Amino acid sequence: MKAVILCGGKGTRIKDVSEILPKPMVPIGDMPILWHIMKSFSHYGVNEFILCLGYKAWHVKEFFINYKTFRHDFTVDLANGHVSLLDDMNSESEWKITLADTGEDTMTGGRVRRVKKYLEGEDLFLVTYGDGLANINIKELIAFHRNHGRIGTITATNPSSRFGEIAFEESLVTHFNEKPSVGSGWINGGFMVFDNKRFWDYLWPDDNLILERETLPALVKDKQLGVFKHEGFWLGMDTPREYSLLNELWSKGNAPWKVWS
Image (tube, rainbow, N blue to C red):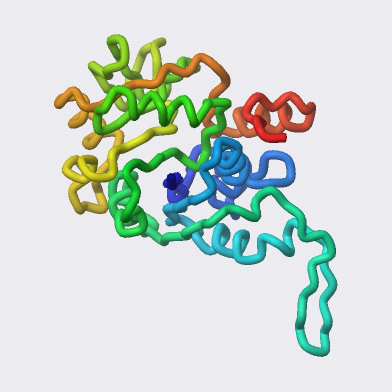
């Protein structure tokens, strides 16, 4: 199974942390938050990724093109330019990553639509954002989706009212409000699963299509959006305060999202 990660936004509210890097490349510890998200998926056996790039896409491309030399000691023979890794042992060796430039100004739905061709042959696929960390059990999420048989599943978390609020009954989403002004209920924490055959009827080819404002509410209307309730850790890195909190948790060895060993 493949995980699509939305990495193209500009992250304007976190520019005080870094005006150079795109938000998915902002570090938690010494590695980008994107790497932490991918490690979480990999722990549950998801090792194929499609990164939907946009704003400052070259930073993400450069990181993965040079990944081995970033992560390991190496020797360079200047006579021929040959690079020899000195400790080529890492748990990311199974990763297969497609880096797709989906446009700097493309909206979330448009980005997912642009990578449809890279999902051929998959019955299901995962979608999440490049700025949210959680200790969600991905295997249980996938099993839950298969069990209810609807087109999509989103993960519900309950940390804050400033994200898109949802209402649900049992396993079915009954209301989706992208940006409530006041609220204290469950929100869409990302970590979504979609049926690769039926989903595209709700994702028409338009770069301005917003997944959260148009596609998900349309699925709700047709009673085709399930909800996986997650009561564990979840935090989106949307502000400098959240950036500092995530780094503090990591530095103290108390990061709940670190499910890998």
